[in-house]
Image (cartoon, rainbow, N blue to C red; front, side):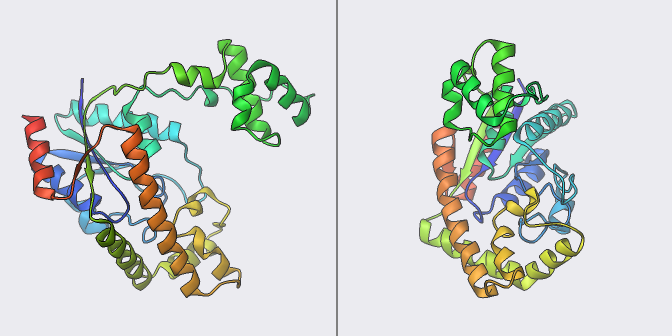
Length: 294
């Protein structure tokens, strides 16, 4: 079973720097566990490692998608597992670094996405209402998370039921969600007030670094606020400014508020979904990694 070091935690806590330090100390290579850093051109707002940081350790899953492209949890799962195998075969330590909880869990655990297996339009003559009623007969639990107007998801749920003779909810419940690797999950944390100060400082530095100019360049190149890449915190909040409805100051404050709320959600997810060992002291975290490896 391959060893995988995982470094998680809330936004702005210092995951990138600690990941690089671990890579240098333990002969590792880094797989980004971030849902926005995969997009080319979204550098400042995603807190993407800069050229100096990228030069210190080999990174994967950064700048692999065009800014108008799409990306899914399933795609991350496939690619991250591919790189885990490659890095391990090369005799190095795979290190996943990031704060996108569902992506990381999908990579590490026996997590199968049955709802994405089948996407063919197999019910061309049925309306959304008729699809909804059909699914109500076969897998009513699925309707708790599927809107009647989301035709694609209605069809996926029906196709999964026809193929597996059980609903998506039942299939997910039957998955044990056990790690498929020998994982050590290090969670970096900080006192709440200090963390929020760091979040605010980071966003101020992003503005100084040219975040508005970065977004302007993306829009000029055809990116739209409806694109998946622009749904991340640090980008979506500026839609109002570019549409003339909000001031820059209002948008920046919204980024700070959303970032703080996101940090709270990250703590909740990692505490509830994964076996995380939390550290405020980075030297103690490093010692935990050393003991695990030896």
